[in-house]
Image 1 (cartoon, each protein chain N blue to C red):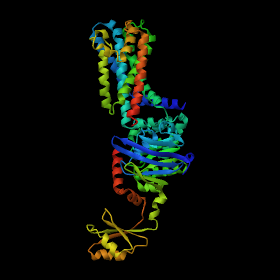
Image 2: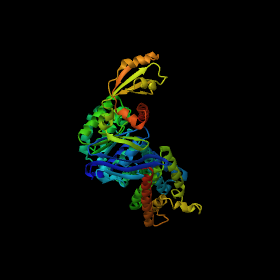
Image 3: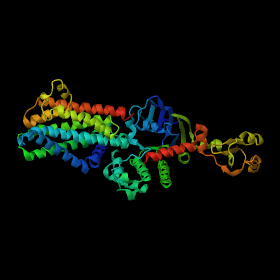
Image 4: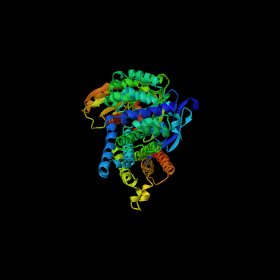
Length: 330
Length: 245
């Protein structure tokens, strides 16, 4: 257990209710200084509510929050000078230009005029928005809005940064750029609390991840440790013509050295400690008039861990989030 | 210093983004002009009625100017979530709301001087006690803005805020002695007049312009000041309860 002096965040027994609904249910976690901590969960899991409580946008029903040694349980304003937030929706001022929006956000943190103009120009350049600096925010594209919102969240160079779905609803190139900036901030020592529905994003960026479902943290571990059980495991995915019959039991009796699972997408998933021999499997299926249309080696990822831990279809979660994200940004 | 930078930036941003927009400037001029013209023609008394009407027109200009724009800007920023940016800034809620309301107060004060300027061309204003008029206008501006703030905190949409505002504003035209004395109201309605802050501001203006007033100026200023404090504190309490859930 780390001492308070090296903890950027210490959250104990945090709970939030909205009427009869418990949005966040007795969660505890801690984030070390300079760490990139991921918070993964489906829609309505309690991620944004948690961020809102940590940043002072929502009241705590119970629990304790300590940010960089400052007890923010009763006074969330106490640590706001050292935190930054990039919300899940772009929320800058539509009638101001990109440059003016950044300068205004810097002024809110008491930064002098010359300094805030300098930082605004630097950030516009970093996010490739210099050409749009004098354009009103209302006229920005969705991706540009997200990038400027991100820039506004870091203009005061916060020691702790909360990122709520920072790449939702933006194009691939912009998302890639945002991830590079997140990695760069992390390298420079910024503590980052990241919520994302892109599991591969969390896997690539986060040092430690907490899975949150229905307001409860179901697992917290280092990303490398989460993937450990899958290391050395061979996984093969067979796409078959007839997915109506569940052959898992028949396959298991003929091939006891493998574990078989039928997936929702009509594939057969084969797991083994040793390399899987495809030929006998294909023959077995063809003898039962089932055509194998594709055999593909699969490399387990954090998505598998997520599905295993939460029981939630990660693909479905991603689609829901993308739909919600595109609606919010319209 | 840091707090002052934040305060002045919020104030400047609001002035630029909302209050100094051409539609609002023209509204700020046309609205008092229309009220002045309407009451002047309706009274049928000639130019000598200008000073009599002035306190009412000044007050109505401030009241409508401040409450309309503040409720629109606040509910708009709440809806677009840009207000969250302000709540996340390391400045106290008290200072933040003072910064947010300062623009509306200034807008209300500027609105007040539109009918005053018009009146200057139409009537002899040498007898007016400006040392009372100016602080009264400032206090009416503040109390009207805080009334608008109090109303806005209860609304989640712009149209709701406007509806709530009208619920308070229009009865005030008749109840606060703007254009006819409170004493001419039915006796059972009069207590209502004295629970409305604008009544005390109008009383000062009537006293300063025509020399006729019901309460002492000290009492009027004290009560008006108390309304400012109470409305601001109630609004802060409601913001904490409703906006930081």
